[in-house]
Amino acid sequence: MSHSIRAGWVVAAAITCLVACEERKPKSAAKAEEATKAAPARVQGVTDTTIKVGSYGPLSGPAAAWGVVQRSLEAYFAFINDQGGIHGRKIEFVYRDDGYSPAKTPGVVRELVEKEQVFAMVGGIGTANGRAVADYLDEKGIPVFTPATGDAFFGSGAKKNTYTAFLPYAVEGQIIGEYIAKELRSLKVGVLYQDDDFGAQGVEGLTKGLEKFGGAVQVKVSCLPTDTDLSGQVSQIAASAPEVLVIFTAPKQAIMAVKQLHAMKKKPHILTSYVLMDPIMFKLAGAEVWDGTISSAVTPLGDDEVAQVVKFREILEKYGEGKLPIGAFSMAAFAIGVPFVEALERAGKDLTPAKLYEALESLKGFDEAGPYIEGGGFSPVLTFGKGDHQGPDSLYFVRGEGGKWVKASDWITFEGAKKEAAK
Image (cartoon, rainbow, N blue to C red):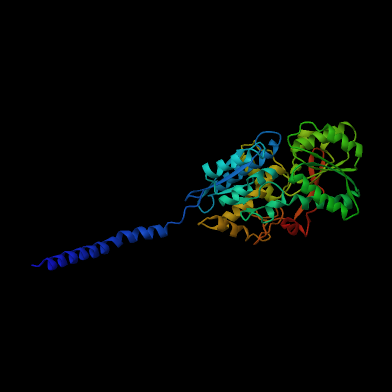
């Protein structure tokens, strides 16, 4: 046999072997390929049985009263879990203390995102705190629902991953200014404000509201959330003698200022932002000091007998083990948690950030109590949409009487709220 014939047989045998191998190979390879296609890409914080959600807030320090929001969210999520969760998944809620310090918030949030692997961030407290982590959360693609702040930035759509159910401080300030002019019939107004975007936006809105009626802010005095002595600021306010003093600060500074003015017998009519609309203010300041104060409000009063509020009180009592105070701060947790859980429900079983955003944008005129609770009318009507990340456009006013809040107005809708937020 010639060398060339023998070589041909060898080549033919090799080809036959390769063909046979290739015929056998696709059976296992095809299965692997099909399995890869069938298995959805892993979504951070989402398993077959859980959805991990994160938050941050002042569980300690001068603004610790606001930490009730996180604890109340925890109680609400525990209730949802006991009803069966969302599409068979339980909500695992992980939150951290940042002491209301914007310098600490980034480290806390990085831990939640990179170590805890949360799917979304919900209800983080503080304007400067939220700004400190906004870029990071956007870059990481983490959905952010309602940072507990009325900073217009969060409803403007500047960050595609962020939606809010809180009214902007600038809009709140404008409604307050108009209310003072129309209802209190005063244009002699002073303001004590926190020296950050929270206070600045409140003052901006207040000025606009008063200007519509020919008024102006007579004295503007700033403070910091770390201030422990406001004697200088109080002296300025007393010397100017405004008829109405509007306050955009954290609880500690508001209480210090009003108590000093009360002691000096120079206390004007006090009107505060909704961030101070909680019964704890009467306890911390004293009812004799805080009575007569008017505050804006964006959640129901904790002692309302509306069916949903009664149910929420029961949830707080049971899942908070009787340790959670009932008031605006705990009610705010439901105003945040309810639409978020509703959106999780609408997003469906195959949860992703994109599907959550789509679900949020399906909320049109939403004022329900969310999954497992019947009824509505709990909080401001929420409407989101493409490019519209600002949910509400209304608030109402309450007044301190006998150491508690009572309603002082109906809901007031500000028609330009969404346009203001988008600026």
